[in-house]
Amino acid sequence: MQPLFVGTHPAIDFLNTALAPNGELIETLGDGRAYLEWLVTAGLLDEVRSSKLRRRFGVEALDAAAAEARRIREWARAWLTRWRASPESDYGEEIAVLNKLLSRETSSREVVAGSEGLKIVELPHIESANALIALVAAQIAALITQEQPSLIKECSGSACTLWFLDRTKAHRRLFCSPSTCGNRAKVAAFRDRQRE
Image (cartoon, rainbow, N blue to C red; front, top):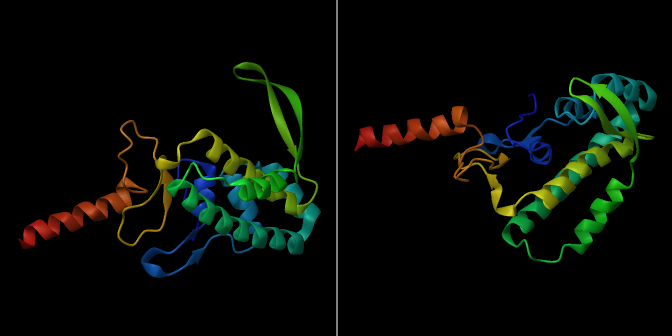
């Protein structure tokens, strides 16, 4: 199965790389190749760099990076669950772990010409396969520093385990996708009304 991008934030989409519709676990980051493909699709790595890194690091190192990414994903899910419930708590230990992950990456800045003129961009340097997790760690850091915990929600679909960041104006979003889980809920409600 292909990863789903319904979370409206890369950190949430990262959590959604493991899902369990109807209780059956589906893992979308099964190996290093899948992990690189997810990073590209999420916009955290471009296709050219991904190809170069695949050749440079090799299958074994990338598979190990994917295994670590799966562990970090579950650690982040547990932390974000606690953070949503109690945002004022002290998360010094979690922040220390996150900072350690962020330190795996170095970066430089470069001026580039674009359609809107000149701009400065930050270019991450990935020196080892295990430094790839820093790309995800940066998104988790952005999530906890720039978003409200109450807007990180779990889908209300009866068999759905996906999360999303509610960026709607009224913050009343209930489903990961209105066309799937939202539609299923409407159909179920309609059937219940028909039975009555």
